[in-house]
Image (cartoon, rainbow, N blue to C red):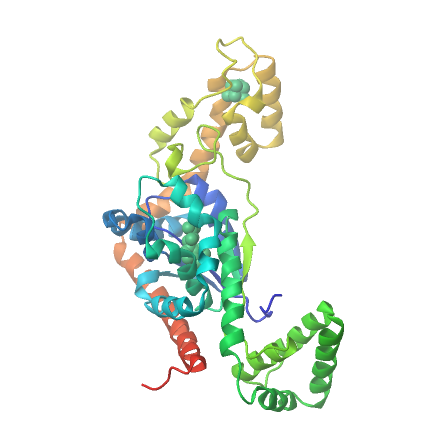
Length: 405
Ligand code: TRP
Ligand code: SF4
């Protein structure tokens, strides 16, 4: 049951720094971030600790990729004016929350996360039977919960991690959201809303609790959101009171699934560094052209006048992303009748990719030559993030009864 309120529109997402970004990242993730930054309060971070879980014996890769990745984000159009960009390890509060959450997270929940066994299978050459690797998704939960983020834009493979985060939040709120005088405090908070709103709240709560009417729950949440004269603590209490639980300290986030189609790589498989089929955002235009010119086509087209079938050709998948209808018709017609050659067919794709990357590469060059600016963007982002993280952690410590120091 979602406990995010309309107030909780904060967006958070992270990426592991394990090398330069490519078109797969751009179409799959970054374009989505860039859209969200116009409508939501966004926090995007470099998940360097997450990279350590698999690269603990190869930390140079991480160090070399951190700033580079932020440059790729900025070059792609992530705007430091509207989004905050930061580095996970510069906000050590993530680590404390991870530790605290680890105390109440059942081991079985961690072992059941599908990526745990999948990744161990996939990366057989690495010893991933580590404590840190098992804890990876819980560290991700801490990343999300420490900002009380309502939305987490991720790919399909990360949905299970957001799901775990929701369960952990629910458990946390259940255990620590209880106050001995919860009911009294909730009643007092209701009174503060004024007669009319209080009556409405009580009716909606009753409808939800007695009949399970989700609509009443949503209306009640919207009502709480619109209240100007109650404190954050009271609002959390009243959210919790609606569902009969305690105070909601850590709201449950939602996964925001990226709707973008999978970006095909040069061989028709999903674009990914591990397949060696990528085009980097900062790929040299000459090299890019060569890569596309030499990429495989329908194997049936051995000679120029052999007809082909676009459905069996990875170039066609790129046309599907980059080319307007007329060009696609031209490809279909020309390929199946052998009226065009593959070199000719690839040219519009080459032109489109070059045009797409041109402004990105120009911006990247500017940032490469002005690393001070990049550093200060990161510093600002870290500070902003840390302010929020500190507040949440204080509340977490308090609700766990850890305020004796
Ligand atoms: N696990 C994510 C990935 O591999 C990266 C990540 C770490 C993340 N923490 C996060 C994504 C928090 C979203 C929110 O892509
Ligand atoms: Fe592929 Fe185009 Fe060649 Fe047909 S003409 S096989 S679609 S590259």
